[in-house]
Length: 111
Length: 112
Image (cartoon, rainbow over all chains, first blue to last red; front, side, top):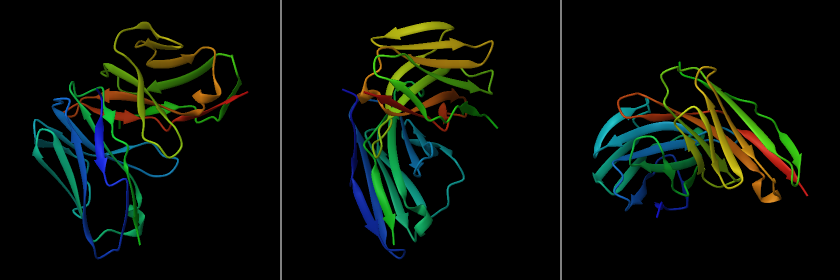
């Protein structure tokens, strides 16, 4: 089972809203990731959690706030986003820190 | 800056042919290499990984790695229309926790 579950699948939010994206994996993977993908571009790494601790922040603006409540869950809290933040947000997990398995993504539209 | 380069294509092959996708990378210390398939509007799906020089076969897919030339390729034999997708090459780089650097992807179309 290589399932990573993301909710919601679609999200429309205003620039003054606060929302959260959720990600769950039950494979016992030690690393979890948030990626952002714009149309016709490759995924861009945002954050890496390893053993529930933030290990990489790729200079992401503070309007994106990650949280890892436990080894199976990963959240991305969104606040005061801009229209250019509209994208597909992908969660992934990995046991080895190399082979990453992606969830289905949340398509975010900021209006 | 660690980079992964792919021919952006598009690459078009007839059904039943061999599709060849190529990728080069800049970080000589990289040890892990991956191919992801991404259908339009969907998330990337891991289809192959390779860690050692040489070939690795899985069904119709063969990954090839040449660390001396910093080159990775993916061959798809007996291509099917369902193989039409964007193929992303990804390379594992060390950065605290290992992370993936993606190429820009090659769009493959298999024509019936």
